[in-house]
Image 1 (cartoon, rainbow, N blue to C red):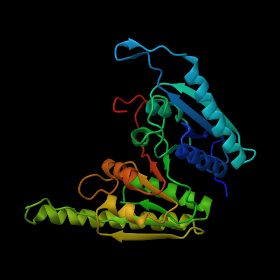
Image 2 (image 1 turned 180 degrees about the vertical axis):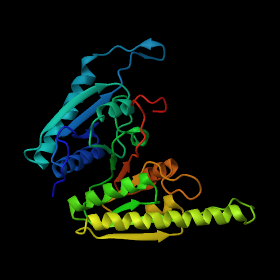
Image 3 (image 1 turned 120 degrees about the horizontal axis):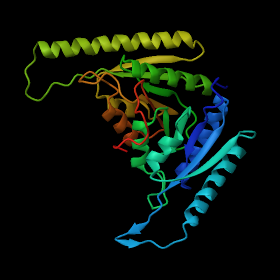
Image 4 (image 1 turned 180 degrees about the horizontal axis):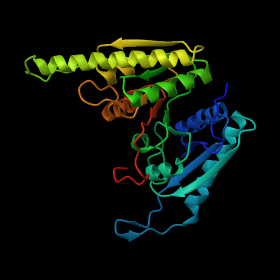
Length: 300
């Protein structure tokens, strides 16, 4: 199955020659085929000028040549997996996270391996995938393993951001023939030693309202995609742990970058970060409407 998309918005994948990056390439190639678009393979490296106060002496062309070989190997693997796929490559000089963010401007999806080489020429490390997922303007998929079977699990909390993640999840499920398991973690935390009062009742009410909003969002998206089996699970547990536990049999776990916030919010930045660290399956982080003006965010 394919999804209509702007042919000028490719799927971008970061590579560093590691096994997980190689797996990410195959996932990205399949995603590009599903979307009917091209694949752009990117490798980035840091060009060291000095180490410990001394000028580093080495062939400046060598990292570029090595990066080019890494990209070409990845491109060959993608073309073998998806014959006829248009694949382009690019070697960029600079820190991995900012360079990937720049390369992903205009992309439909950015795909990374969960963790790769941590050496000077290495590109995809755990911290990089975390940083990129937080600042990218497009959905970011962090690939773990090769699981292709199982439902698409998505966190929902009634917020517009979570609704965007839900749409992404259902569209991916429609393209892959999977079902969707929407998970609402209805969690209200009472501070240690704090007595119940009106403030707590208000939090509970808002949490229940968010649950109803999530239920309506699931019903609406299910009506728009009748061929996709969509279920909603409402669980009274901590959101991060709930999403990790509910996704152990999933082919993909989808979370919004941020959601409601506060005690009743599900898709907090901390939750999506925690899910990226703890999930055992591939994770897609879907941004909301407000993103940084440029990829050179000082936090990256």
